[in-house]
Amino acid sequence: MHFSKFHSAVLCLAVSTLLVHTALAEGPWEITPQSTAALQRGLTWLAENQGPNGDWESDDLGLIGMGALAFMADGHAPGRGPFGQPLERALNRILSSPRPSGLLNVADPQRDMYNHGLTTFVLGQAHGMTNDSRINGVLDRALKLIAFTQAEDGGWDYRAVRRENGHDLSLAVMQAKALRSAMDTGIEVAPEVVDLAINSVREHYSPDGVSRDASEAEQQKYPGQFTYTRHGGKASLAMAAAGVVCLQEFGQYDDWRIRKNMEIIHAEIAKLKDKENRNNGRLPFDAYTLYYVGQALYQVGGEDWQRSYPILRDAVVESQVLRPGNPREDGHWNAGAHVGGKPGDLYGTAVGCFILAMPNRYLPILQEGRIESFQHDVP
Image (cartoon, rainbow, N blue to C red; front, side, top):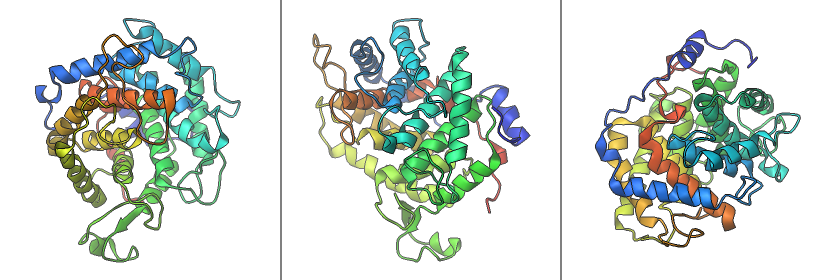
């Protein structure tokens, strides 16, 4: 794309070869016969319940994109193999939908940047996995819109408009993943966009027991976590994971806030051992939370991934609906929050499949190496 010149080291890394993720604990323990079978049941549900126009009865392009992502996460390509046609239909639905501005949202304008960020991320992954020339122009305009709508404080609003102040961390993480997804497949992103976003994410961290205005050295002595708002409001597991994902995507691998939030994530996953969700369709966490928890574990990698992914994986497998002979039920999960009906089942099933497929490392975002040029001090 035609943003201002980005760090040459970033571009060289992205367009050379996708580096194998440096997780220290990769091995056969990541995948079990049960998780493989559950993944295939989930993908089969997505294929059989999609519909001819590829949208699973949803007008949210981001959710349609999640359906496409589930197929790509298991290594499927558009038009080829058992899931090639449903993947192609989903991508066709997305690629036929951009507004003249580049906006990827055909639903309520209040969902502009949720749908846009998530769909742009999926297109970035598709750009790295397919030879579909239609993606280039759509992705280029989508990324320009993300840069154009970034608020002066580094965040984003719900609507695709540029404001003085961004809204919350849930919006920032979606744009972060969209930007990194594009860079991993060789597309340039302006460094000032990244720097502003990093500052914004750090402002969503809230220490417990000391003022947010205290020095970083002082804050590190206390527990704390990322929150929905900049002033410490609405702490949740979802925001703890979202903050970790943002910093990892932007190359801030050694930021001390990551470890604080990983402790929260591990503690919540450990509780899953005592929960019974057998075949009731309820994911271990709601779909939004699970999506970021899984990625936080994977991106930090090493001991963190090895410690908690098997627990998370097994909880996902255990909760899948089993109704052999009933294609409208068998193999799905529901979203658990935020989205209901068939779109909710789409969201839940797509996220469940994504979590189970992560160890396959087919997606560019799961093959990324570190971008060292991001590891500079952001003013």
